[in-house]
Image (tube, rainbow, N blue to C red; front, side, top):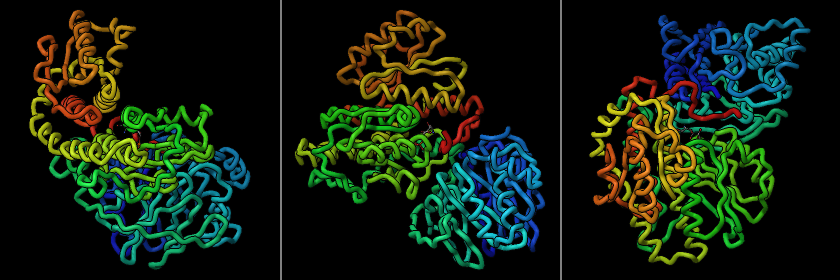
Length: 605
Ligand code: AGP
């Protein structure tokens, strides 16, 4: 779960690589390294810590026009300089994201041939294998190909050779894109890392090997057959990957939500006709779909929990929701007349990809809801709906979540029409509802200054409870996740009615209880739960959308959220909770955009 980047061209490689590496830091940041080729010599620098620490030891800079760089999230071997990439054997230098599963056997064999290892990583076998084949007379590209055939596991690789100005990239089960410039090539773990350098990309497929030299590109597979891949043009601008005056990407991304939701609607909703269409989607005969599964991880899983409620209530099709890491191992009872919806910002989460493979194996129709064009889930699913959130850089997911919920709402309307369950009038009205959301969110954000003060008031507490019901129970889960992951404060979420079955024992004046309480069909029930907390002197933070909330007087803090129809409540109710978590974390001085131990896309199990 690391970030890799490579460059071959006529410009100085060092600033290009460092700049891209900073954008990939969300993938891991326990150590970093760089290798630069110049006049038949490769210079390597590695450092424990973040890319900025690497930059410090490279103060003199490197002058070459080809190189590789890596930011690491440790799997095999502790975070340390000796385990940091690039790894080298003889003339060959490698950066790797993935896991070489048979590295112990390979290492033993290589040791017998006299190879010496300097790190505890699985990766180090790769340059040694390549060197072995070079010693036996293979040329560089062939030596790489033969080495890859010996590896089991996953890899996204950048490889260079000291005596040959050639850049090789290879991919299997870890993401890798090629950026095509004018007489120059880029390699990166994702396309956003290269925003501003090029907008032309090739998304490599499993077993692809790309050989770049003298302005030309050759693509082959591990068997040595030539392959062709399409060049995609992305319309993301350089400014989208900058902080744009905000202190953190997370804050910028919270404030981008009105625009991100508008972008997710554009071109899909036809209000006058009462239709929702997805250009990129060809659903199968929906009448035969007997059951829908929704599978994802983390925040995307919370979007699925909301999706379940929307789809079941409006389409009357049973929906099962699963955490991807559970789904893949539990032998799900799934058949051909079922639909599997996978939700993922990155489209590269290993467990969600495994769930896709499982669904395909069982003959289900697989639909992905994804933010990243060219990602594995976008490419390999039977159908895809893109959330047009733009690049999400902060590790804590914000705008990806609200656009996922928006996309699922659109899917619900689309299916409702196709199944004949909703007439044009109904869909027209419901399109009008979601079209109002960006403006309502903007108003909420414009008036959210008081949340920083709330953060100051609550930053000293060690535990929080979050409560919600119905479609807003996932909002309690998501609000608690936001607080945990960026402020490192313990927070738990419960369905409000479940509190009395255990967690109520925790409540006293030192337990802040965040209550998501819109004026919906469960409002009265939640009022009773607020009473129960108040009776035990719990510290209540009430997020409500009615001026006449019966419990407002019992709450320590009240925050008003715009009233919207039931299915859309999660979108407006999560935003103040995102801001609450953000301000607490910022005031505590944590690393908001790159919280400890986390990575943005979890590409390992
Ligand atoms: C949430 O803030 C996290 N970034 C995490 O839970 C994330 O949602 C999860 O890892 C799934 O990622 P994906 O959407 O890219 O698949």
